[in-house]
Structure formats: C-alpha cells, structure tokens
Image 1 (spheres, rainbow, N blue to C red):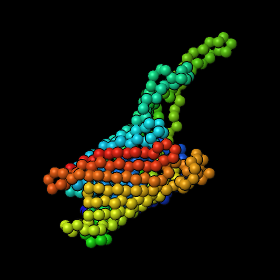
Image 2: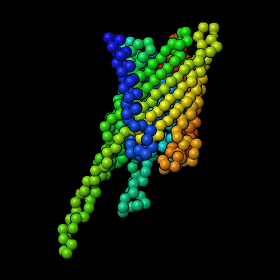
Image 3: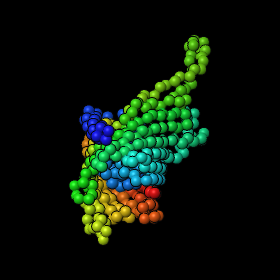
Length: 373
C-alpha cells in the first residue's frame, strides 16, 4: 500500500510538469485576461522575504501558499497571524492573514488559512452624484484555504489545498473554488541530514469566475411611441463576462549547507540556497533565487530576487515594449526571531518581517507572529 502511495505521488509530479508544458504559460499578451489576481499575492513573511524561491523547502502553514506539500512537515501545532502594508503609499491597502496547521495521524497535517484584503472606505459615486456625498462602500476580498498533506515515505511528501475565493462590494460579488496540489522530495546527500530538496506545485486551478448581483442591473426608459411621448420604465440586467483564474506552476530546487557543529554534534549554522521557476498562464514567467542563513532555531535571515523579463527597464503597460510590467523591482529580504520555551524547549514563539521593493510606491512590509507547540 505504501509503495502504491509513493507511485501515485510520482505520477502526480509528472502530471504537474506536463500541465505546465501544455498550459502555454508565460504569455504576457494574455495579461489582464485573468481575474482574482489576489491569489498571486504572498501574504506570508517567511516566503515573501525569500522571494518565493523556497518552493522545494518551504514548511509549515506558509506552505499552503507556495507548495502545500510542505505543511506535512508540521510536527505538532502551528499558528501564524500576519499583516501586510501593501505598496505603502500606493493606496493604503492592507492584507491580514491567519493560519493554523495541525499534525494528524502518523505523517499527515491539516491546514486552515484565511486571507483578507482591506481597501478602506470608498465614496459611492453615481450618475446624479459624481462627486459622492451619498455614502461609502468597502470592497472585500477573502480567500479561505483548507489543505491536507502527508508524508508518503521518508523522502516524498504531497498535499492538496482547496480554496474558496470571494470578491464583493455592496451590490456585486463573485465566488469561486480553486485547487492547489504539490509535492516535495527530500534526500540525504550529506550523512545525517536531508540536504537536497525538490518541489513542484500547481496553483489556482478552477472554473471560471463571474460577477453577479443587483449592481449589474439598471433602470432604463423605454419609449412606446416617439410621436405621443409615451414611455415606461424597465430594468435591464447586463451580465458580466466570466474570467479565468491565474493558474501557474512552480518548480524549485534547494540545498542546505550545514556547518560548524556544536558540542552536541549537530549543525548550529545552516545556509540554504534555493531557486524557483514560475510558469504563469497569464503573465510573464518568473525566476526566483534566494539565500537563507539560520542559527539553530533562534534566528534566520534571508534575501531573494524575483526576476522577470524587462525587470531592469522602466515601468510600462505595453508588453511589446520590453519594459517592466510589474511595480516590483525584484529585491526581497526578511528576518525571523524565535524564542524556545516549554518542556525541553520544543515550543517556540517567533516574529518575522519581510520587505519587497517596488517602484513606484513604498514597497510591501509584512510582519507576522508565530506560535509552534
């Protein structure tokens, strides 16, 4: 039975690779055709500071965003809450996130996360009141993820994440379901440590999404006779165009260098080098590179770079000019501090911070608190 499970995970990995090839990904000409692009925003401090290069080695509840297979590495219970000041002066948007991951069974883990984007209050404007003064509305973007992952052997881990995607304003809303799947492979290439990591994940696969609600209807005047001027009111419903979800595939590699063993014979210092390739179905492809240094479980610092075609050029809205098509300029960095406590110091409380550079605006600042029991 265990052999069949491992075979199923290998088949899943091959299928994910084939999907990435067949999806005609990395087509900037299709930019803007997909919706629900908040699914592409990383709300977690650890992975965003790594430039999302750690697809192959991500662990814990943050794995739900990047590669859900990594949630299987959760030993007991992990809770993270965080907040992102998105693009600083670019509009005052904030992203709140909370996640819980619980170890179940021999090698499994269940994860639950909620991400909410706050746009603030926006004045209501109408044809008769173009300057507002008739109230405010608050857009709501909420993503809820429920995942399950497990270890199929000492080397192979796999998982699936089901997400509820919701976007709404006062009188228009859209709801959809998306699925993520991923695997991680680890191997001991240095005696005593699983230093080599390989990961692949498929994200945001689901049916088309479409807006509906009272906001799609309007009152119009229908003239029965131009000569007599007789008219009547009628309600016209204008359907919204359905749109695709921003599907993508991640393929990553990572390697841990463990140095300077302490008195217990364990490595006190770790340096992880990670790389990731993202094949986007509706945007340009991305290549990420990141490096993380960690001292035991107390302290870690990471830097990364997210490269896209034209990233060094001025910002442009025309994909044919070769200019940068994103406000992000590539550099990312982050730091984590953890305090062990409890019996045998197995529980930890930590704080993480990350920064992503952008031009224009003031970049993204993410801070999070983590409790592992």
